[in-house]
Length: 208
Ligand SMILES: [Zn+2]
Ligand SMILES: [Zn+2]
Image (cartoon, rainbow, N blue to C red):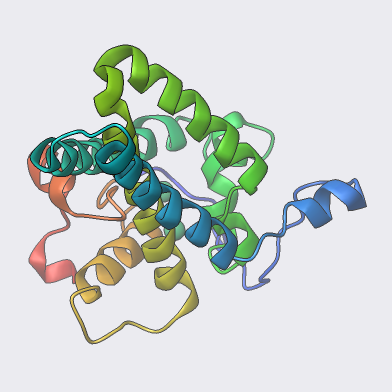
Protein backbone atom coordinates (compact mmCIF):
# COMPACT_ATOMS: atom_id res chain seq x y z
CA UNK A 1 0.00 0.00 0.00
CA UNK A 2 1.45 3.38 -0.99
CA UNK A 3 2.19 5.38 2.13
CA UNK A 4 -0.18 8.27 2.60
CA UNK A 5 0.78 11.19 4.85
CA UNK A 6 -1.15 11.11 8.14
CA UNK A 7 -4.39 13.13 8.15
CA UNK A 8 -4.20 12.77 4.38
CA UNK A 9 -7.89 12.60 3.52
CA UNK A 10 -9.19 16.04 4.26
CA UNK A 11 -12.64 16.75 5.62
CA UNK A 12 -12.71 19.90 3.53
CA UNK A 13 -14.91 19.18 0.50
CA UNK A 14 -13.41 21.38 -2.17
CA UNK A 15 -9.94 21.51 -3.62
CA UNK A 16 -8.89 24.52 -5.64
CA UNK A 17 -7.33 23.44 -8.94
CA UNK A 18 -6.57 26.74 -10.66
CA UNK A 19 -5.56 30.12 -9.25
CA UNK A 20 -7.16 31.76 -12.26
CA UNK A 21 -10.89 32.31 -11.40
CA UNK A 22 -12.04 31.74 -15.02
CA UNK A 23 -10.24 28.39 -15.32
CA UNK A 24 -11.51 27.46 -11.86
CA UNK A 25 -15.10 28.23 -12.96
CA UNK A 26 -14.67 26.17 -16.18
CA UNK A 27 -13.46 23.20 -14.13
CA UNK A 28 -16.88 23.01 -12.42
CA UNK A 29 -19.05 20.85 -14.64
CA UNK A 30 -22.27 19.23 -13.45
CA UNK A 31 -22.14 15.42 -13.79
CA UNK A 32 -25.32 15.41 -15.92
CA UNK A 33 -23.47 17.19 -18.75
CA UNK A 34 -20.84 14.51 -19.57
CA UNK A 35 -23.27 11.69 -18.73
CA UNK A 36 -25.71 13.03 -21.34
CA UNK A 37 -22.96 13.67 -23.89
CA UNK A 38 -21.32 10.24 -23.61
CA UNK A 39 -24.34 7.98 -23.13
CA UNK A 40 -26.07 9.60 -26.10
CA UNK A 41 -23.00 9.76 -28.35
CA UNK A 42 -22.26 6.09 -27.53
CA UNK A 43 -25.74 5.11 -28.70
CA UNK A 44 -25.78 7.59 -31.61
CA UNK A 45 -22.53 6.23 -33.08
CA UNK A 46 -23.94 2.70 -32.98
CA UNK A 47 -27.23 3.75 -34.59
CA UNK A 48 -25.23 5.57 -37.26
CA UNK A 49 -23.29 2.36 -37.96
CA UNK A 50 -26.53 0.38 -38.21
CA UNK A 51 -28.77 2.72 -40.18
CA UNK A 52 -26.44 4.95 -42.21
CA UNK A 53 -23.51 2.62 -42.80
CA UNK A 54 -25.81 -0.43 -43.10
CA UNK A 55 -23.56 -2.57 -40.94
CA UNK A 56 -25.11 -5.87 -39.90
CA UNK A 57 -26.78 -5.74 -36.44
CA UNK A 58 -24.66 -8.61 -35.08
CA UNK A 59 -21.46 -6.73 -35.98
CA UNK A 60 -22.78 -3.51 -34.42
CA UNK A 61 -23.64 -5.32 -31.16
CA UNK A 62 -20.37 -7.30 -31.22
CA UNK A 63 -18.15 -4.25 -31.76
CA UNK A 64 -20.16 -2.20 -29.23
CA UNK A 65 -19.53 -4.86 -26.55
CA UNK A 66 -15.89 -5.17 -27.64
CA UNK A 67 -15.45 -1.37 -27.24
CA UNK A 68 -17.16 -1.47 -23.85
CA UNK A 69 -14.88 -4.25 -22.53
CA UNK A 70 -11.76 -2.55 -23.89
CA UNK A 71 -12.82 0.65 -22.08
CA UNK A 72 -13.02 -1.23 -18.76
CA UNK A 73 -9.51 -2.60 -19.41
CA UNK A 74 -8.11 0.85 -20.29
CA UNK A 75 -9.78 2.30 -17.19
CA UNK A 76 -8.17 -0.40 -15.01
CA UNK A 77 -4.68 -0.07 -16.53
CA UNK A 78 -4.66 3.75 -16.37
CA UNK A 79 -5.83 3.77 -12.76
CA UNK A 80 -3.35 1.13 -11.67
CA UNK A 81 -0.23 2.08 -13.61
CA UNK A 82 -0.59 5.81 -14.46
CA UNK A 83 -2.69 7.41 -11.71
CA UNK A 84 -0.83 5.60 -8.93
CA UNK A 85 2.69 6.36 -10.15
CA UNK A 86 5.18 7.21 -7.38
CA UNK A 87 4.46 10.68 -6.04
CA UNK A 88 0.68 10.27 -6.20
CA UNK A 89 0.38 11.82 -2.72
CA UNK A 90 2.97 14.56 -3.26
CA UNK A 91 1.65 17.94 -4.34
CA UNK A 92 3.32 19.13 -7.53
CA UNK A 93 3.80 15.64 -9.02
CA UNK A 94 1.91 14.66 -12.18
CA UNK A 95 0.19 11.70 -10.51
CA UNK A 96 -1.03 14.05 -7.77
CA UNK A 97 -2.66 16.39 -10.28
CA UNK A 98 -4.14 13.43 -12.23
CA UNK A 99 -5.39 11.43 -9.29
CA UNK A 100 -3.77 12.08 -5.87
CA UNK A 101 -5.86 15.22 -5.47
CA UNK A 102 -8.98 13.06 -5.85
CA UNK A 103 -7.72 10.74 -3.07
CA UNK A 104 -7.13 13.80 -0.91
CA UNK A 105 -10.52 15.39 -1.62
CA UNK A 106 -12.70 12.32 -2.36
CA UNK A 107 -15.93 14.23 -1.84
CA UNK A 108 -15.09 17.14 -4.12
CA UNK A 109 -17.57 16.66 -6.97
CA UNK A 110 -15.69 18.76 -9.50
CA UNK A 111 -12.72 16.38 -9.33
CA UNK A 112 -15.00 13.56 -10.53
CA UNK A 113 -15.64 15.13 -13.93
CA UNK A 114 -13.22 16.05 -16.69
CA UNK A 115 -14.24 19.30 -18.47
CA UNK A 116 -16.33 18.18 -21.51
CA UNK A 117 -14.26 20.26 -23.93
CA UNK A 118 -11.28 18.06 -23.05
CA UNK A 119 -13.13 14.72 -22.95
CA UNK A 120 -14.91 15.42 -26.26
CA UNK A 121 -11.57 16.31 -27.90
CA UNK A 122 -9.95 13.10 -26.59
CA UNK A 123 -12.98 11.06 -27.76
CA UNK A 124 -12.70 12.48 -31.28
CA UNK A 125 -9.03 11.49 -31.40
CA UNK A 126 -9.95 7.99 -30.13
CA UNK A 127 -12.59 7.67 -32.87
CA UNK A 128 -9.94 8.65 -35.46
CA UNK A 129 -7.46 6.06 -34.17
CA UNK A 130 -10.18 3.38 -34.02
CA UNK A 131 -11.11 4.18 -37.62
CA UNK A 132 -7.55 3.42 -38.70
CA UNK A 133 -7.75 0.05 -36.92
CA UNK A 134 -11.34 -1.09 -37.42
CA UNK A 135 -12.44 0.86 -40.51
CA UNK A 136 -16.25 1.35 -40.46
CA UNK A 137 -16.64 -0.92 -37.41
CA UNK A 138 -14.88 1.88 -35.49
CA UNK A 139 -18.24 3.65 -35.04
CA UNK A 140 -19.87 0.84 -33.03
CA UNK A 141 -16.57 0.09 -31.23
CA UNK A 142 -16.15 3.75 -30.19
CA UNK A 143 -19.86 3.82 -29.29
CA UNK A 144 -19.29 1.01 -26.78
CA UNK A 145 -16.06 2.63 -25.55
CA UNK A 146 -17.78 5.98 -24.88
CA UNK A 147 -20.77 4.21 -23.32
CA UNK A 148 -18.25 2.54 -20.98
CA UNK A 149 -16.76 5.93 -20.13
CA UNK A 150 -20.23 7.27 -19.27
CA UNK A 151 -20.86 4.18 -17.09
CA UNK A 152 -17.54 4.76 -15.32
CA UNK A 153 -18.40 8.43 -14.68
CA UNK A 154 -21.84 7.53 -13.35
CA UNK A 155 -20.57 4.77 -11.03
CA UNK A 156 -17.67 6.86 -9.75
CA UNK A 157 -19.94 9.82 -9.06
CA UNK A 158 -22.45 7.59 -7.29
CA UNK A 159 -19.77 6.06 -5.04
CA UNK A 160 -18.60 9.47 -3.85
CA UNK A 161 -21.90 11.33 -3.78
CA UNK A 162 -24.45 8.93 -2.25
CA UNK A 163 -24.75 6.32 0.51
CA UNK A 164 -24.21 2.64 -0.43
CA UNK A 165 -27.13 1.53 -2.61
CA UNK A 166 -29.01 -1.71 -1.89
CA UNK A 167 -28.78 -3.01 -5.45
CA UNK A 168 -26.25 -4.51 -7.87
CA UNK A 169 -24.09 -1.38 -7.59
CA UNK A 170 -23.33 -2.12 -3.94
CA UNK A 171 -20.26 -4.26 -4.81
CA UNK A 172 -18.83 -1.47 -6.95
CA UNK A 173 -19.51 1.04 -4.16
CA UNK A 174 -17.80 -1.17 -1.55
CA UNK A 175 -14.79 -1.96 -3.78
CA UNK A 176 -14.06 1.67 -4.59
CA UNK A 177 -14.45 2.67 -0.94
CA UNK A 178 -11.88 -0.01 -0.02
CA UNK A 179 -9.53 1.48 -2.65
CA UNK A 180 -9.92 4.94 -1.09
CA UNK A 181 -10.07 4.23 2.60
CA UNK A 182 -8.36 0.86 3.24
CA UNK A 183 -5.95 -0.29 0.57
CA UNK A 184 -5.02 1.75 -2.49
CA UNK A 185 -3.29 -1.23 -4.11
CA UNK A 186 -6.60 -3.08 -4.48
CA UNK A 187 -9.80 -2.52 -6.46
CA UNK A 188 -8.56 -0.39 -9.36
CA UNK A 189 -11.63 -1.14 -11.47
CA UNK A 190 -14.41 1.36 -10.91
CA UNK A 191 -17.01 0.45 -13.53
CA UNK A 192 -16.45 -3.31 -13.11
CA UNK A 193 -14.45 -5.74 -10.92
CA UNK A 194 -13.59 -7.86 -13.99
CA UNK A 195 -9.93 -6.85 -14.41
CA UNK A 196 -9.27 -6.88 -10.64
CA UNK A 197 -10.39 -10.49 -10.82
CA UNK A 198 -8.16 -11.22 -13.84
CA UNK A 199 -5.05 -9.48 -12.42
CA UNK A 200 -5.53 -10.52 -8.77
CA UNK A 201 -6.23 -7.12 -7.20
CA UNK A 202 -9.75 -7.86 -6.01
CA UNK A 203 -10.08 -7.04 -2.26
CA UNK A 204 -10.42 -10.11 -0.05
CA UNK A 205 -13.93 -10.92 1.15
CA UNK A 206 -13.11 -10.17 4.80
CA UNK A 207 -12.25 -6.53 3.93
CA UNK A 208 -15.71 -5.86 2.69
ZN1 LIG B 1 -6.89 5.59 -6.96
ZN1 LIG C 1 -12.75 7.71 -6.36
